Each structure stands twice: as C-alpha cells, then as structure tokens.
Length: 219
Image 1 (spheres, one colour):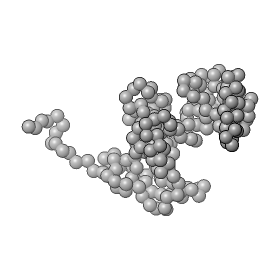
Image 2 (spheres, rainbow, N blue to C red):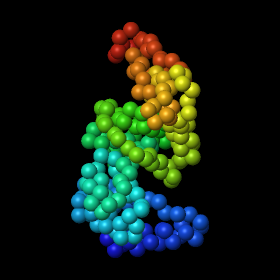
Image 3 (cartoon, rainbow, N blue to C red):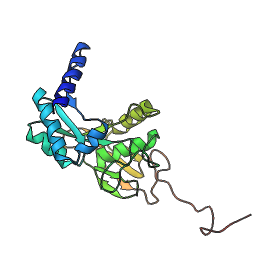
Image 4 (cartoon, rainbow, N blue to C red):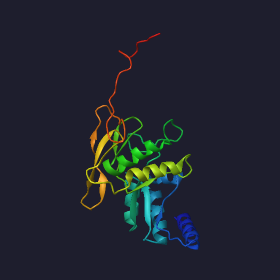
C-alpha cells in the first residue's frame, strides 16, 4: 500500500512538471496479473490509490471481480481493460508470452480483435472458443515491434463515425453501420461469413478446395 502511494505520487509529480494531469493508475506486469485474483493485494493497491486521490480511475484486467470489488470498496471508479495485442485462453486469462501465438504483431489481426471486443464483447481464445469480454479500455504494448502500426489499425477499426447503412467485412463478419441509442455510429455485430473469412473489405470469401480429398498426394 505504501509503495503504491509513493509511486503514484511520484508519477503525478512527473506529469505535473510536464503540464499533464494524472487520471488513472494501472498496476504493471506481475503485480497486475497477481492482483486480478489476489484479494489482499488488490485491496492494498486500491487503498494506496484512494489515499492519493479518489478522482483517479483504477485499471485492471477485464473479468476480474477481485480488482473491481477492491476499487469499489475504496470509492474508486474501475476500468476493465482488454488487450488487442495479446492472446487469451478459454478462462479469459492472458496467455503466457512464452507460448507461441501469445503476442499479436499483425495490425489486421489486432484490429479485428479490438473490433470484436468493442462491438461484440467477445474474444476468440487461442484454442478457438469464444469468450465473453466486456471492457472499458483497450491496451496495446508500446514495446511491441510495429506498435504504432498496431495502434493505427485498431483506432481505424474502432473509430466511430461510419456512414449509416455502409457495410464492411471484418473479422470474418459482414457488418453494417448503425446509429446506437447514444447517437454514435458504430459497426454492428453483423453476420458471420459462411466459410469464416472475408474476401475483401466488403464481401465474404468462399473456400474452394485445391485438392479432391485431404491426405491425398500428387507428383
């Protein structure tokens, strides 16, 4: 708790000297991962943040009731965070970086994941299952190769302001631009492409077999 107070105070001071204002706090790395399920640790973090200022937003892993309850107990707003550049398992947990496929470095793949989180409130796990994912904010790691391209692709996919009734094919679904109740225009959940992929920006792809039977050989 004391360490959190000290570090939040230091970051706020650095921000102030550069004319910025601290608005949120997010634990980092192993501390972040452990706090998602460790109640005493989550409560200590929340208390430290609240001692500095209850105007700050506490950011934690989407789906972590432990972090949400810790924030609420201290009168803090909680922002559930999802990752557009990381893979998830079927339990909604981040896949270890040591596992192949854990890091997403392709801008189109990151944008498709971001769009599904924002519009459909789901992610596709590394095992292929759909996992509910309700998030208030998205994270991209600045130290990932091509981070700027990932960021631009995700923003472009999620940017509101599409033209009403326009269509786009993203993440294997044909989506239509709709005006939501809050007046913002966003891409709808859409209809899944029968063969699961897009041919271009507007239409679904059609799978054509390049060989008669799987497992056959040809010289």
